[in-house]
Amino acid sequence: MYRFIFILLSIIVFSACHSDERRDDFSFTGIKIARYDRLQYEAAVQNSFFSLQRMNTEFAQETRLLVEDVLDLGAVNTPDINERLCAYFSDSILVRLMEDVEVKFKNMDSFEKKLARGFRYLKREIPELPVPKIYAQISALNQSVVVGDSVLGISLDKYMGAEYPLYKRYYYANQRRSMSPEYIVPDCFTFYLLGQYPFPWMEGHRSLMDILLYRGKIAWVVETILEGDGDGKIALGYSSEEVDWCEEHETELWKEIEQNHYAAATDPMVIRSYISSDARLLFKGEKTPPFLGVWLGMKKVEKYMKRHPEISIKNLLEYSDCSSIMKELN
Image (cartoon, rainbow, N blue to C red; front, side, top):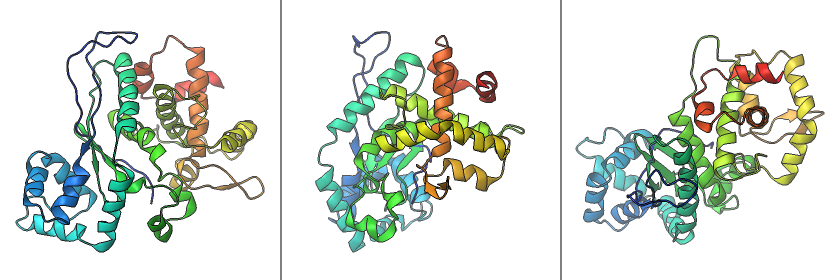
C-alpha cells in the first residue's frame, strides 16, 4: 500500500508561553500526541463502553473520519455503527496488530519533540499557519496519515518496521521500506503541507513539470524544517547510496525528460512513473530510487532558493505557478 493524504490532525498541548528561540512573537510550548489508538483497543477488545463513549464525544471528528473515510463503514450516525466498528476491530489479526503497536509505541516523546521542532520552525516562517491537533490511531492498514480540518492522525499500524511479519504477507519490499517509525514525522509534515497548500489544478498547469516542482517544493520545505541536508534522506527516506545515484545521474535524468518531451506531458502514466513510490526501470534496466521526479523537483527548488535568499518559505509555498522556477533556471 502507499502513503496518502486525507487531511486530519489531533491533540496537542498549545499554550501561551514565550519561546526564547530566534523569535518570541508567538506562543508554542509543544505537541502532545493523543493516544486514540488505545481507546480503539479498549473499546473493541476490552469491551469498554467508557472508551467507546470517549471516542464519540472527546474524539468525535477523529471517529467520524475513521468510520466514514478510512474504514468506509458507513455514516457515523448509523444506529448500529458502534457495533460495526467494534466488530471490525475484533478481528484476531487486528487485535494482534493493536497489541504489537502498543508494545512498539509505548512512548511517543521522541516523535512529539520532532513534530514540535518542525512546527516551531513553520510558525516562525508563517505565524498564521494553524498547528493541528495530532493523534495516533489504528487504521487497519488503510492509511498512514489522515489530515482533516484542524486534526492530523498518525496510523501507527502503518509504521511497525519494514521487517514486521504481517507486512511481509501483504506488501512488496519497496512498499515496506516506508513503513518504519522514522517516516512518521516527515510523512506528517508532507501530508500536512499538501493539505494546507494543495496543488492548483488549473488548466494549462497540469504537466509533469508542474507536478514535479510542486511536489519538489513540499519536499524541500520538509527537509528544511526538519534540518535535513536537502538531499532527500529525510523527506524521501533515501539512503546514502540512493542520494549518490541521483546526484550522479541528475543531468542525464533531465536530458531524458527533455528528449522525450515529458516536461509538458499530462499522461497520468508518465507522471506516475516519476512521482510513484515504486522504483522504475531506467538506464539499461537499472532500478532507480522511488519518488525520483520529486527528488529532481526538490533539487531545482533548492537551487532557486539559494539564488533568491529573499524569498521566504511562505512565499514559496504560496506560489501557484512553479513553472517560473524552471524558466529562470533553464
